[in-house]
Length: 161
Image (cartoon, rainbow, N blue to C red; front, side):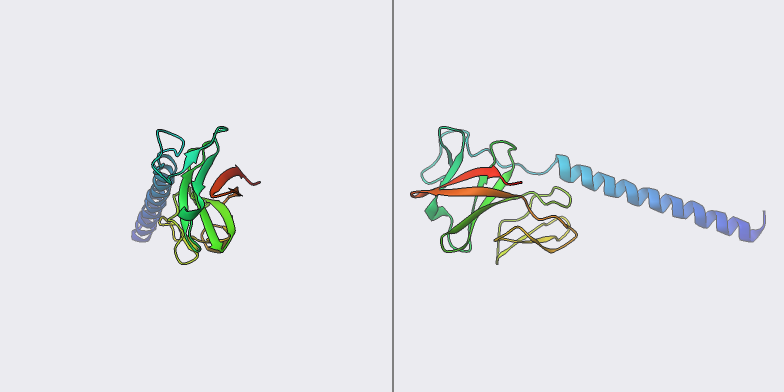
C-alpha cells in the first residue's frame, strides 16, 4: 500500500469512528431525556395542603384562582399521563394549560418566566400564552389543555387535539 492510500484509509476509519461516537451520544441523550425525566408527584395523591391542587370527584385537578397570578403559573399534574401541566394566566382573566414536556426531545421545560417557557436541554423557547414555538430546535407547539374557571377554582380539562 502506498503512503497516500494509508493516509486515506486512516482518515476514513477515523471519520467512521467519529460518526459512530456522535450517533451513540445522541441516542444516549434521547433515551436519557425520555426515560429519566423528572415527573412531579401527582396532584391527586394524598391529602392536599390548603390552596394546593386537588382532585375533584371525577378525578379532575383544580387549583385556587389566587395561585395563578397574571403573568404567572401554577403547576398541576395531568392525571392521565402523570406529566406536569402549567396553568398560566397571560392576561387578567385569561387562563390556559400548557404541557411541560418539550415537543423536541421530551425534556421538562422550565416554568413560565418573562412570558416564555424554556427547555433546558436544547434551548427551545415557547410562548407562555399559546405554547407556540418562539425558537427551535422544537418545531411543534406545546400541547394545550382546557382550563375552566368554577368560582374561585380553576379546573384542568382534557388535552386539546
